[in-house]
View (tube, rainbow, N blue to C red):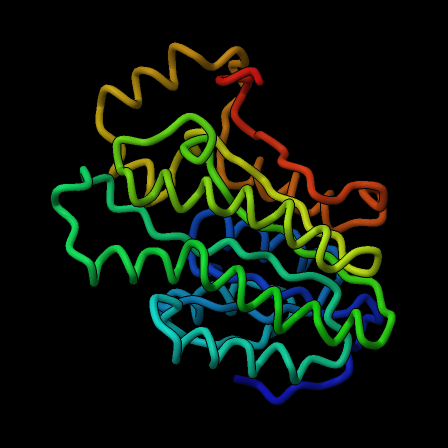
Length: 249
């Protein structure tokens, strides 16, 4: 990782996990174009290098596996070195698309580390110093419609439901200094998750969506950028569905 330094743009640094592809990659591009410095995290080091080469200014990068304690601690340490941490986006997620009977305990634990424990502990590392110093900050967690309506992958669905509860609780824990919100995407096209979703679930999403606008990684990244921006200064503890109206609540 590049040594922490003062942000040259004055906008501060945004931390994005799962930044090598999909929503994380799209968000890295949007935030870099908006003038933020970036700390990008992913288990895919080659993918991180590729994204870094696409951006107008070199980001800090951390190659870390969030499916266990050591990788999460590595990222917590990196967050502690940032001079002016503006936002944390807990985007990294693990989806296998398999029924529960195919999982063993080690697989369940690893997926829960990525989907639940990492957002919990990274937010703790990010938000606690800000609260102690009386500084403002922002966290955006990524859930899924699977966390609200269920999933054929019970580990994924239950972990994403946990992210929704975690978001609401974190918002209370870190108020009034750090806002915590959640984005809950539907079926996002051109992502690794889309390729693993069973065909009948594809058909269900297509049948349920009320808008014909393409739902892709860039669409979700736009909503995350809004939640980071001052325009969302009155929002905390909220779950924002980005699903083309597939599941009206």
